[in-house]
Length: 232
Image 1 (cartoon, helix red, strand yellow):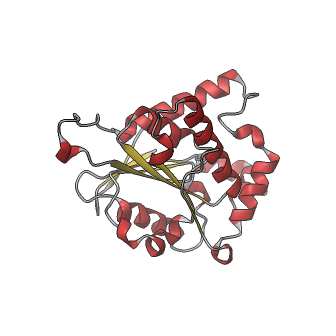
Image 2 (tube, rainbow, N blue to C red; image 1 turned 180 degrees about the vertical axis):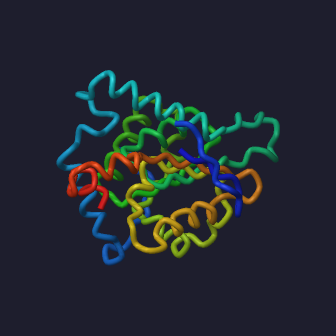
Image 3 (tube, rainbow, N blue to C red; image 1 turned 90 degrees about the horizontal axis):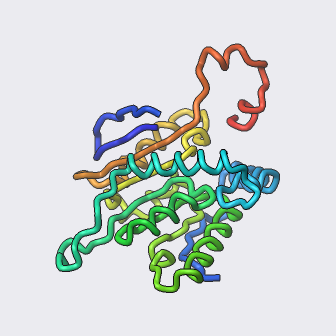
């Protein structure tokens, strides 16, 4: 994982049925990976952290990972109700919605947190809508459904679609998304630029978690491996 603080700063490595608003990227502008992502989910639905058939150990590991990421986000406690000047929402941008576990945990745990989450997968967006609706039906007083906004939008299109978001977010979080950025020249740089662009200049902090393979090990595996196929 990595933490980023503010604009132009260094990146520091760390150890290792209620609808919510949705923004959609026009189909003509979606990259090929959009369709590949949904096909992958059709083939591997058990990867959802909310799946009832998930093995206990894997489920526990996923929860530990999410808890670790939440700790690294260093979200402050909500201000006292009497401090009206401090009642502004604490904004988080999530690049890569996944199955919605992180955004739902954050919104449920921190009543002052507001989340905008990006995904290219219609299937994932629908699943998160379902999770939020289920949560709202069991907790009618909860404001979670009002504080999670799902956008079917590429991070690369963020600046064009929401120019006013520049420097608007207290936190940016991206879990296992950096691997999907691709090898095209400038793609990785563009990814970091969007994160820096979205973060507040004062106090802004980003947490990026990625899956890696030791370079030496990759050189020894067969030329066309499953991991390389998925990654490329």
